[in-house]
Image 1 (tube, helix red, strand yellow):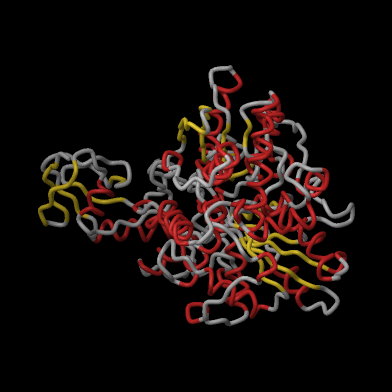
Image 2 (image 1 turned 135 degrees about the vertical axis):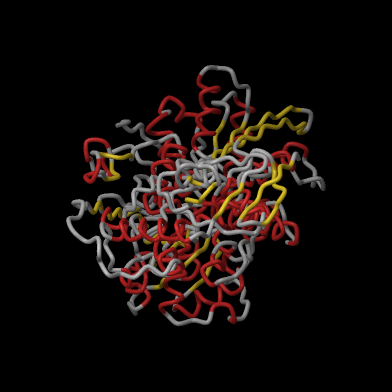
Length: 581
């Protein structure tokens, strides 16, 4: 790494050549505030919060985009710099909805934090006319309130990075607003409900649709049996809402909190993930043996499914027909579990806790009611953030809760299921089972390292029982589109493809705790969360889905066999081509 010499606030430093001033200052242990900047996503220097003085420059420069050079002298904390940043914040506030106490991001808002750090007083000295605000509550997963928007365009960049691009800047000057083309509502365009815009937003302008009141009402209904199940990525994100280090696995405390919130049973969505692997690996092997449609593409991610329906409807036959683990778990609770426990399934309310806001859309899809026409697989889907909100509302001391285990009926799971939350995890779990089935052996080498990691696209070829299986893994829809274009053009010879909507997989889902830009810009949050899931996998006694005694018992007592008539009715679904607007 080549270094160059600079001075920052009069002190000499050697910093990597090619750095921006922002990166050089960080390398020297100096914090420069930002608002619009997200590394590799939104590097536009628009908000002017990161301005600094550079000796010889005619005006203040934006540190996030201004490169350093040999001998540069930089001043990050002069009176001129401080006044500029403070005035910028006051101007933003003059056009901002300042009802902070009732805002979903209060205490975690980057604008609020900057105002506190820079001593901005809400004296309203620039108050006057305000841009006409719009509140869009049309979609199932998201609420957009433009009265809280700061026009940083981070959401626009996130949407474009997802290869969807259904939001952007409308109008000009003082009338500029973020919205859909022709001012359409979000529900009327080809949004895929991924929620990456929410994670990117620095304020409360974007938030998930809050369903916590529905959950609380269900818990308080004495006629209802309320059962909750939690996705693997939730356990490595939830702790961040309570000040714990990024990636801390809080599974035991999470289970304890859910019991204290009043849920009748606490199950693990990992059970549904193991079940998904049983059905998906069987489907894959059937396609390979019988000349079925290849490559087969995973169907666990509802954002990806909706993307395919809108943008690649010609490839719908390539999708696995398996429901997601969320839906499979709900279908089994309302059929097998209800029968076994003698509970009327109409009295069961199934709540899922997911790292994903697209799950709120998924539960309303057609053909997601395996136990009966009037029995949706899942009644209410909430995010990791919503669960944290419920825990805080109940005044639970989360960090000091004891570690407890999931309820046993559906609580025994495998390492294969745990890694579903990381990109490549579904592929690896499926290969573990498919390899054992094809060889008829209990293989000991089960770590498929080539499909691990946070890279956007990973490709590998494995020799499985004498057959070369070519696989690809993509996370983030821009990367998915690159793979799908190859398939569409006949330039790809993959057998099996895993696609996750969110970059890095579910650990980086749109419903996970939101880390401020300063943390996101200089830490690989996805890798830290995924590392904890792989640690859990490594330490579990069972690491293959087909070894789960609960799964074996389910097939023996109820389902019969993977891909059978009962399995198909309960655990498989269908898709529909959607218009692209």
